[in-house]
Image 1 (cartoon, rainbow, N blue to C red):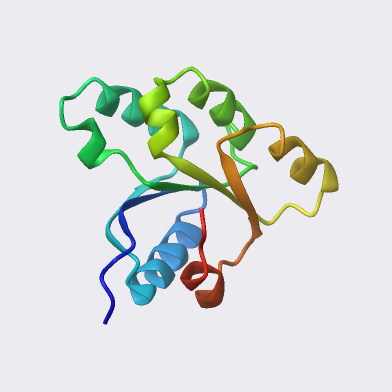
Image 2: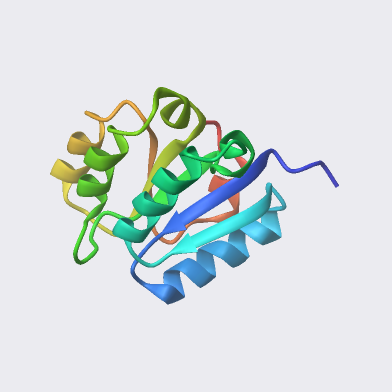
Length: 135
């Protein structure tokens, strides 16, 4: 079996079942060593802010963040606005994939305005899309 491509992946989705399914799909694909899950964008952004203060930030920050759009309190786009305020090193390390059930074409075009958003995928995530990640 090939070595994992990524050290750490983060899932941000208010739906715990979606997080669990996506986590199992990622584990089955063997592309990462660690998976962090957050059920809220606010807790995820706080986690990133706290991690970048640590000396081991480059080892613990996620390589990929799968981000849902439609969430309460802080949605995916509000998360992206906060993400833009993080350090250049954090923004360079963390690639964002929008993972959504939204069929609104405006969401897709709006996501293009963020340089850290590398891909836009529809739920549910498939084994093929995980294996073929090129971010």
